[in-house]
Image 1 (cartoon, one colour):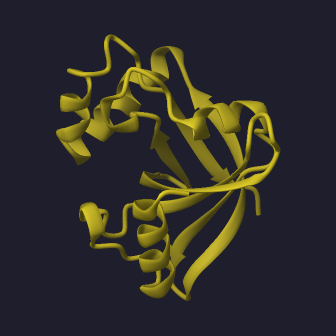
Image 2 (cartoon, one colour):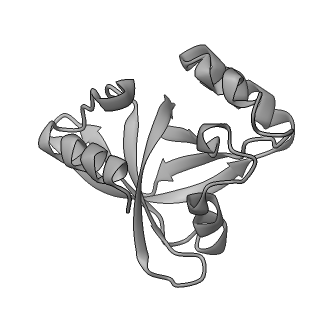
Length: 141
């Protein structure tokens, strides 16, 4: 885990899910996955948009031409995913069902990210044509 992620994770857990670093505010979850190849536990702080009783997350990787490792982890182990999310009582960890947003559902989801932050649109300038994968995380309890 890099130092930036460690800082964000510590701030998230210390402030009941509120993170000022990088302007996340309350639009952050901690994604718990298993490594695609290693099956080792991984944690990634991610910008997340509430969508009904779910969250939408996007694999923009700050506009990199490559998808972030967590995308591969989700696809390899979709049944072993949880999030830590802000709640009325602080932060709670929830097991989640994962579905990749595809087809006609992708564009409306993409628009939600652009509306939340124009930075996502700027990321397309450096992504070399890569379409950012979007996932829906739905608590299973």
